[in-house]
Length: 412
Image 1 (cartoon, rainbow, N blue to C red):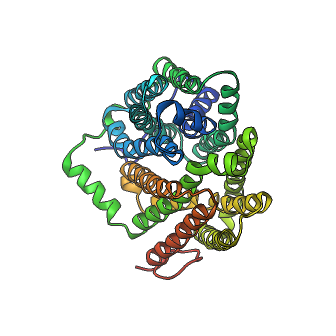
Image 2 (cartoon, rainbow, N blue to C red):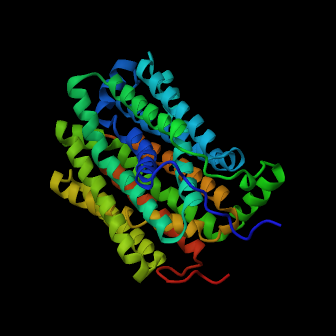
Image 3 (cartoon, rainbow, N blue to C red):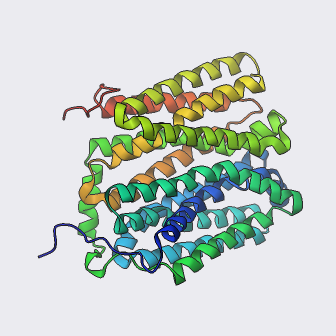
């Protein structure tokens, strides 16, 4: 007879501080790979023959597509074969993808390498959560997760500035050699210092019946599916900004080398809001905070779209409204993810993979179309923001059966 609860595994001989730092490195791996090359997009497009300036945005979208697709597989594979081998395989793919990006001789090959890099990055994104869950519970688990999330939040603030600094002294391929080196460092730590944290008796075989039962539990939950869709739609606004940020801030508004600083300030707003959310969610609840944030985000986006339709917004006005909208984004994602996972105690691994992959792919697709619509003005971005906010509100109304801002779920 199996025990009622899984015994916590140990990460010895890795000390607690080293384990936390390693988890933070894994979390930052994906965020850095998404944003560090933003200042280099014009040079990448010119050197590799991108058909148009808007096609450069595929550098971001291809990575996100591979990242989203990979998450569907990593959870089940790590439950079957253990955390360490799947993590190592993912890191090898990440490093190989980065190296192929650095030596690519044309744009299609480069995009394929970016997709492969993103697919590999899905392993550390999924497995770092499993590592923490294997080793800790309760407040200690929350503490480790918080430390790791700090690195995830800080990476987008610093990454574009790192990319800009590299471009001052080297060419764009050095950015990808740097990403490969970062991947090699984490790979070496995983091979030589990280123990396997999933005991053999807790490994689960991959069967069609088991996967079908888990998928049925995930897809059969109105709350899980609804908040996964709403999160994906809202992700579209964030990815649309990331895809077109270099063109809007560096080129349209002429920020040039100051682009990474401004981009970092916007990313810092999201991180600040996530911290504020952690302080307020216990008092006001996940639904009240996230629903209110989506409503305000839609209102600000509608105001920006109205302004952009009549005139070119001054830089200070655009940045103020953009920063306000992005602050609200920080109040949404953690709450939406928690609400989607809430009913999935018995299928947490599959649910985590499904939600992560599903939301990333939806967001990447919407972000791709928002970015491709760029026409030398901020109107497409503002309209895309408004459409994402409005669509998320509709999904929330359906999911909660018309009851928004409540502390408790809708009945039924």
